[in-house]
Image 1: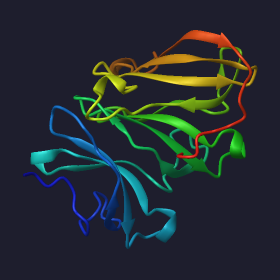
Image 2 (image 1 turned 45 degrees about the vertical axis):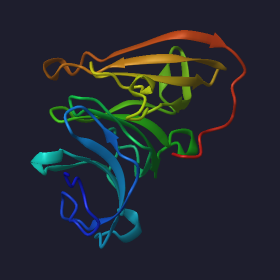
Image 3 (image 1 turned 90 degrees about the vertical axis):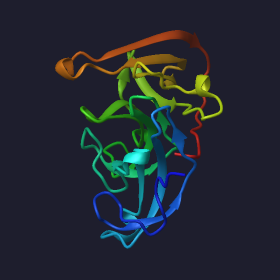
Image 4 (image 1 turned 90 degrees about the horizontal axis):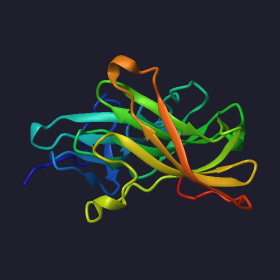
Length: 206
């Protein structure tokens, strides 16, 4: 039996301690990624939620993102997170909700990728230009330990997600994480585009 994280245990940055946990994502390397609430943080309710990865038997804990942390593009800061997906390389993907953004409710949700070498990368964000229009909604399925094939993240570091555009189009996009030596070469493809009426709804969970 391996303890991954424990209520009362200090957060990796020593800002507060764990007080509650969401359902974890598990990989074949024995790592687990999870969202957690914290207590005793410096910012109180402004930084008491985060997403973390436990490295299992090695005992290491890594903070992937934290409420109050600035978004990678510095447009706003994180407010909440969905359950993450985790592959065997320890890479994680999650949807995040943000506050204090330039566009308010038009750019306050995004999809993010974490890698130990590359850090936190923004994959896509509501309000981003895309295919001659603008992203208005993003949907990502993290899958589960019982149905790995249902996850939008694979072992190659590729991320599949669905999207809606301001002009009414919807589709599926595939993001491929860049090699560390060629970070500027981001591959973002789109397929299965369909023309349909855009729904003006957003998921309630992030």
